Length: 189
Image 1 (tube, rainbow, N blue to C red):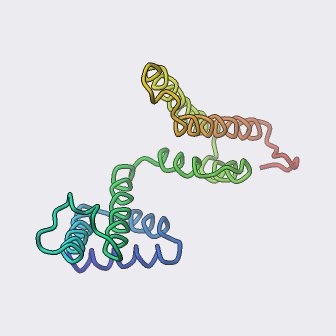
Image 2: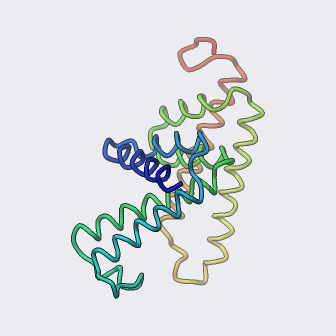
Image 3: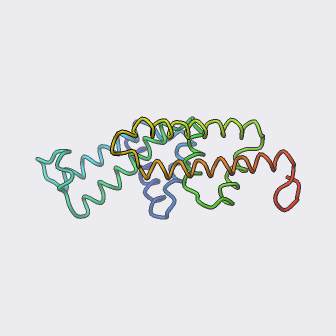
């Protein structure tokens, strides 16, 4: 298990060094190679790096005081660990993965292309649109709940809200195009 996990970590690091971290994690996930053994191995690497950088008396609380290359290594491993944990949690949730990728895109043309690549039927788009609407409603309700607190003007929630609205507009445009059978260049899908 340890040698297999070492190979997986090397694969992920090779992907990260060539700006393909997401691709490497997705390939491992698609082949069911992201598991608790891999997370345990990464955690052990973090602990070894903590000991190497901070000495035998270092604790997890001392992690903030570590400097230099050890700090960079620990941060990189923590980032990979968190990304793998997210992959495990969302493994069977294609809607969450699609939403995450759409939230990263600002260009409507690219967003519409991603949506078209993932949906072929209006019913599926309607279901995804309901999912997005639930997210919007959650943000609105959460905003109302927190309106008495200091966090009511959270720019992150506002940004996500606007992006969810943009995704909804793209979904509605694509539904209209699929219903008519024509895209914007008057060619049949």
